[in-house]
Picture 1 (cartoon, one colour):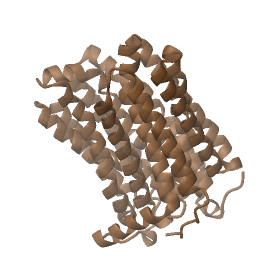
Picture 2 (cartoon, rainbow, N blue to C red):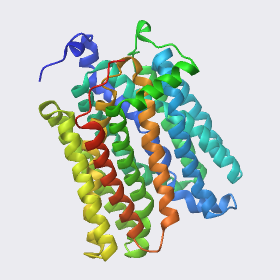
Picture 3 (cartoon, rainbow, N blue to C red):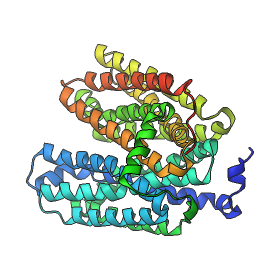
Length: 410
């Protein structure tokens, strides 16, 4: 495997310390999963303690996703202006304040507010971690490193609910947020260990007018928009699966809660395996080839899921098998779409990463919310949305990415 000219120009320490870099960036990118998954076992206890309704407690997840999606639009340009390390540490600090507020909340309204603060700080880690990878590496190598990052951070959704459940055995729901505070301190240490990747002479000026033009230019780039919408449609399917599968498995098909956790873990393992495959093959076949393979696999598995859910074919296996394939395709779609979208914007990597993250998490939140509106007591709404989003992602990839002219480097 040969290095690009950009990678060859890096200090030797940047390449030799890659395991340390991957571990630090994986910690920063795991904020979303840790913050959403660890407290899920405590939702019933949280509802009782705050004397509120289930719908109100479910909004604590919605508020987090909204804050996590929108605040990226600010953190990305701040990273382009002031470098990566300082905004990351500021974001982690804000996350720590929000997490402590959640642990001390006495009402549902206070919890919603502090979850929003928590999310606003948490998203700085993922958006700027992606930008740091783009600072250091070219397109194919970026996709390889991002695959490794997602392979490592794939552990987070596996262990977070387990940690939350164990904490509840010895502590109350507030203990989960104190443990999450400890994770934030670990992330702060990881941020301190990173070296700045954006030299001062390559930083972009910060201004509302310039920022608006930057985002408009990104949205006018067909390839960028294609990658972003494809990833957003895929994430919409992922969040629809997360919101709908507990009901489809546990209530509709009467799967024990422990067995549901096992099925969930198997899907995460499939995603991690495909990230490993992608990291090994991307320098040989290229990002676009593997990206197209992933979105075709997601579209086909989504259609199979929709048909099975509508007709009731194959019972539980008719849902679990295509969902396993769909979730596993994350390993081929996300890293390659991020690398492809950001390839033409080395000087605007923060802004490009921010807009990508906003579209990914924003569309994920929108379609998981739509699932609640369409619920009819069967797995059909979940299957329909996942299937439709798989086809929409395939259409975006074919119409906007394939054959589109490359954007000017900016």
